[in-house]
Picture 1 (tube, rainbow, N blue to C red):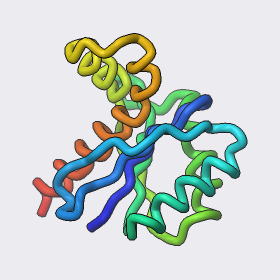
Picture 2 (picture 1 turned 90 degrees about the horizontal axis):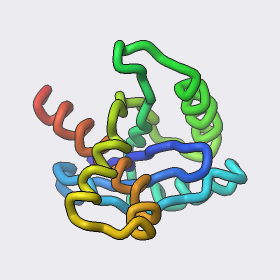
Picture 3 (picture 1 turned 120 degrees about the vertical axis):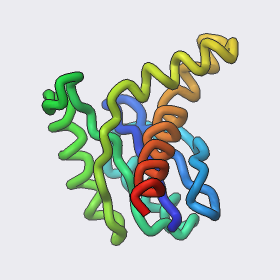
Picture 4 (picture 1 turned 45 degrees about the vertical axis):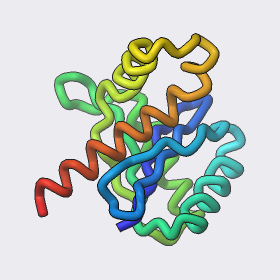
Length: 139
């Protein structure tokens, strides 16, 4: 199954895609979050071009598992995105994905500029990879 992973942020939206086998997530790009309609159009175009069957959107949660104010923004984004794409959209726990992405880039000695340019796409990759690993274990 071909999947698209999304890390929604108020400024940028990270996008990742699964490989042909559905076992490896790859970072694609970052999309400006505003205007939101343009961002949704770009994500829909990426999904169509890749033959995506499901979109996985990272859902922010507090460390205790509850949902905070950021989750409301993601829910609003999902509602808007549903108007642009016919495929299923699911949310997935994204706790610490951005911090993980930042840590990985620091360990790889990325410059500050390069980290800023790739942080959200890498976070989307981590969200999507965690989702694929979990559903793969369930099957």
